[in-house]
Length: 372
Image 1 (tube, rainbow, N blue to C red):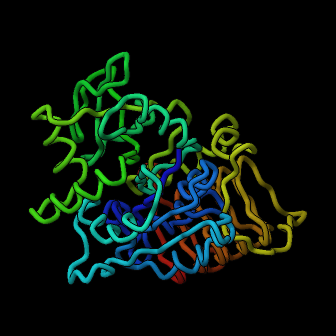
Image 2: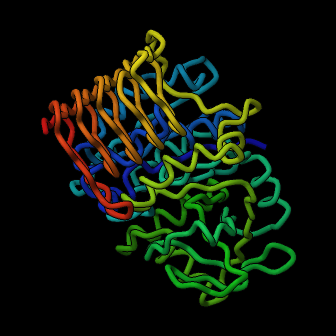
């Protein structure tokens, strides 16, 4: 059985505040060398999905630069197809308000594909999942829609837009809500759905024509409430990192230092691909000290780092101390600077002796290209 993949790049832009002022959620850097889109795109490729459409909204120039032709994900070959679907592809004059309305830009893409099923995914959720297993569950259930969900309640940060479900022993959804805890047996949707392709096209055409724009609220909830649809729940049991806010994004970058989480998400059997950059190895001076940190290649480390994620081409000068922070590509931290609980965007310059300290639950953010 084959599937077509649909990826939403911009659904949660507003919830990530300053980090998505000039970029999509999909192109937000993560874990030292990746972008959020890398995880869902790699999952699709590893699940033998070779026809993928990426729906964009705005600020997608950096995303296009990162993805290119899709060659790093083996999507530029003759029997594969990868399309970036801009918001005005259908001739509409307004950008979409929700994922169902966004799909109206993908109708032509869906109609031109042969696979019988479609898997739709947000880019905010990081995991390593085989969609073929979820598809097998969907087909066996006979349901109209399969919702992929997990039980990671301890690590869960309540979000108003999250789909909360309960299911019976056969995987059939027994209750459904948006942003409302249904009890200890609740599962949290992962923003991933499997639907029969022709059925999805009919839903898009019928609902968007009537001013409905949310797949979860306007379609799933309403149809479930009047018992006109069966929903299958596929429970994913691996680690799930949800990046629905600045705080959750901040914490999740550090969670990959947990060996169990890192080994599962970055499994050698189903690798996470990203844009390849040929960089020199990172240089560690005699004055450097690094503890519990993730550091990409091409860096020069002369200062002290603790519990920090460092992207490519970062320079940390002698005497600098960085703790509990995310340092993005091309940033320079000057001599004697002190950084704690901070997110430094790309190409930031921290002057010699500067001090920048945020809270553990409210990290300070320095915008791209700024000098402090």
